[in-house]
Length: 142
Image (tube, rainbow, N blue to C red; front, side, top):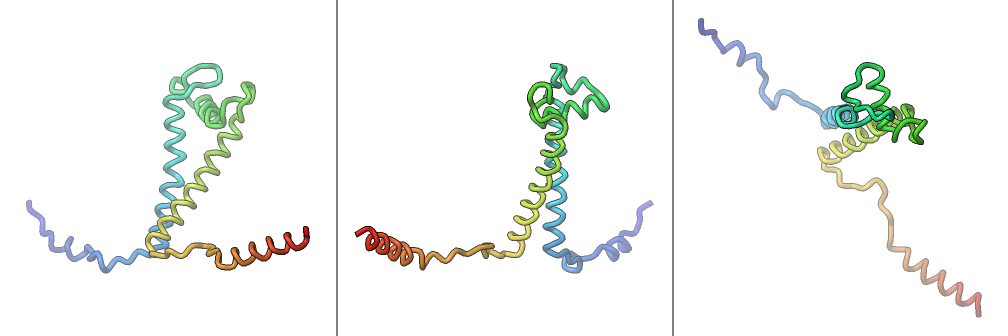
């Protein structure tokens, strides 16, 4: 039986009718990057890394695999001089937050077309101050 697609086409809104703010787009990109990059790091380390015992992490399961992966991300176990699970967890969460903030800010700046820098240094007065500083030093040393 062939169905009537007219109801479907009426219910689908035109692209112009759906308004998504620039902030929402930036937030979405930030969340995707903030969650995606750490997940990719964990997957990669778990698939090619080795635990401090020399065992391939990919052969481990459960808590052993999780702990070995976090320790590998943290630079190795505490016993071998690495940062262990704690550092691995900190790098994943902190790194994810930093990546999310950077990507979100970058998307927002791109979408708004705002090319203003956060801090605009006024470099016009620097040569004058240097000239005064040099002349003051020369007068003081003579």
